[in-house]
Image 1 (tube, one colour):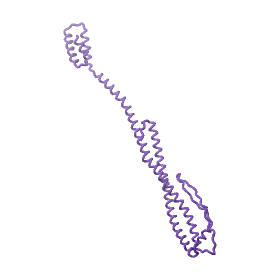
Image 2 (cartoon, rainbow, N blue to C red; image 1 turned 180 degrees about the vertical axis):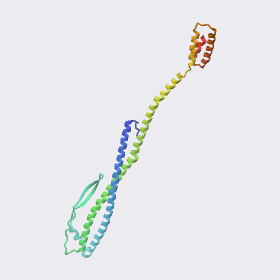
Image 3 (cartoon, helix red, strand yellow; image 1 turned 30 degrees about the vertical axis):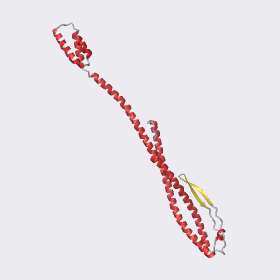
Image 4 (spheres, rainbow, N blue to C red; image 1 turned 30 degrees about the horizontal axis):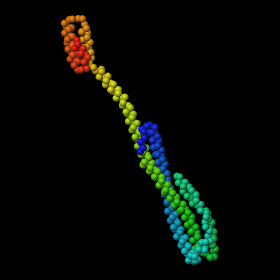
Length: 264
């Protein structure tokens, strides 16, 4: 299978090709069934005609043998009968397959030999061979048609198998590959912004969870430090606040505040 780019245009094109391949397979399958049905009918007809020809030939040769026994060699009587040139061949089409149609003209049964020097055995042989001639033309038409139908069925079967076993599975696999690639691409495009939003949300949560106690203590210390009151109670509170701030600032995040407290 040739590598194709997973795009929507290629997906639509491959789906159209798959639909066309399935339609072609259905048409070829119908054609094959019709040709097989036509060939089976001709085969049945050919078997019947072959049986009739065998019986008619046996009857004609038996009558000819009797005529030869009673009249001698009948070669001179056979030469008196003209050659039949009324054979005509046409064509008929069955699902695009040209089949021959063999016809013989309506021949008048004339007496080409005299009645004084012949008998009924020669007449019977003559009529039997005329009947065999028409049956042989019909049998030749059927056998040639069966041969052409068999060749067409073989070619149609190969084309149908190529579509069913090669082309249709390839198109199906290509459609599956393109569909999965497009779905994966859409999934990646959908999850990437969401992950960025989750990261930003976590940053905001971390910032919002910083202890507000430290800021309150810093404000209280600054207010007391810059106050002009010298009351002992305030100084004691100031030292306690300063100790509490130093203890809180030991984590490392408030190094600037710790330096500020040590300076004062």
